[in-house]
Image (tube, rainbow over all chains, first blue to last red; front, side, top):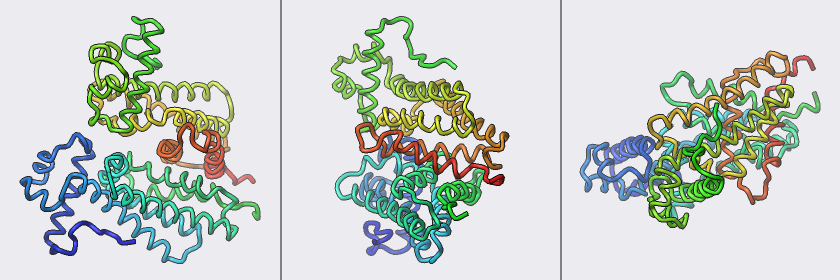
Length: 207
Length: 207
């Protein structure tokens, strides 16, 4: 799967890319405070200190901006999942690592995650699949780790789909209270969460 | 805490109340599909087959409607929590029962929960506290059960606040995929979730 395939990436230099990223980040913050629908183009212009023409030059449309906010989060989430897959650790180690990676992204991008989780119904056309595809792929990664652990006998005989949804809920829901600059680091949360979840699914039959 | 203190409850008969409830439910469905901000009063009138004056007679304002959607879910959640508190069960029994109660509400009101979790930033003034108060109270109930289990030695020495947030995330997040009429009942989900969580926090030091 291609990562970070933002529109026009190949046609523009690093300065343009950096400005575009900063517009995406600023706009995520505006959307998370006021909502996607309630935010007009003029507000986005003001927040980014750009005229309407200049803003469109970077983002194309409001919906493209929403898709770009999604990509920014999901690309990082998938890069983390790739790192975990390449680590070659045991299923328990991989699941713990995946939790650390996921909470690290949520911790760094609370506004993006808020917009990502709340405003995705506004996406239309092929952007719906652009949103759903990586989400499904990530869910499959979690399920695969769980199944591998069942196969190896390290995890008890669980329902991989429901267990993956439990794990995802526990971690994803942190976007409501886990913020960069807050009292808790991503690791402060990932560690006790992994402890709960790992004990919860570890096979204790053999002792 | 007063439950179901909807505006004007005491001044109107059961027929008015029933019609109001049905307007709240229909509007929750419209908001969950189109978003609170994007939905105009005229759309709410059309969905409820009412003129503007008649609609305002039942709901007062769009924001009051949002608060009423919140109350409808949160009242039921708190009634469930009261039942659990009155059951007199052990902390593990109470936590399992609380999960069943919570998933039952989410399963019955997916649209309300969607609106509740996504649109609460639109609440203003005293409605912010009306939203936050019961949420905090519910979180405290979860923490209290966890603490009671630690005190009784049935749960291991855990962090009650973070553990409550893990439990809440795991259960609340089901609103994205657990729907009435879907393949899974609330119990189908509550049972394996309780199994994961209970093993995750049970004290195994004594055997």
